[in-house]
Image: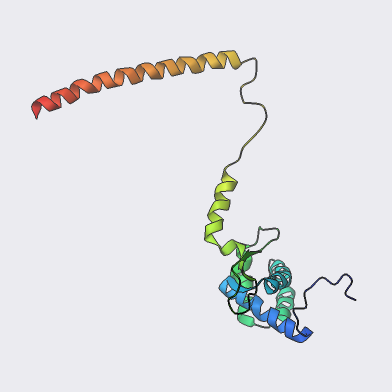
Length: 182
C-alpha cells in the first residue's frame, strides 16, 4: 500500500525516474521553460524547487548537493550564477505550470513549466501591481480641519475657472490677427 507516499512514480523504475527528472531539471534551468506532460511537470516541480532553494546559498556544500541531483556541471554553474541571483528575494514558488492543449498522438495532457522570474510578460504585470497600492482608513485631513480645507479647495477651483475663462479670450485676438495677416 502507498499510504502517505507523495510523489508520482510515473510508471518508471526508481533509477529511470531519477534520471528523467534530473535531465528535465537541467533542461528547465538551461532553457527557462520546457513543454512536457502535466504529470511530469508536477513531478518536476517537486524535484526542482528544493534545488532552487538550495542555490540561494552559494556554498561548496550546497553546490555538491545540487550536483548530486542534476549530474551536470554546466547546469549547476548557471543555476548558482544566474538563476540564484534572480530568485534571491523570492520566498518560494519558483516555477509556474501552464496547461496546454492535449497531445495529438495519445491525447495526453500537456503543460508548459517555466521559471517565474524569467517570464517578461507576467513580470511587467506583477511590477505594475506592486506599485499600485490602495490605503484604506482615515484621510490625511482631520475632521476638525475639513470645513476649512473644503473652503480652500473651492477657492482654488474658482480661481482656476477664472484663469481658464480669461485664457481663451486672450488667445482669440491673436488668432484673428493671424488670419488677417494671411
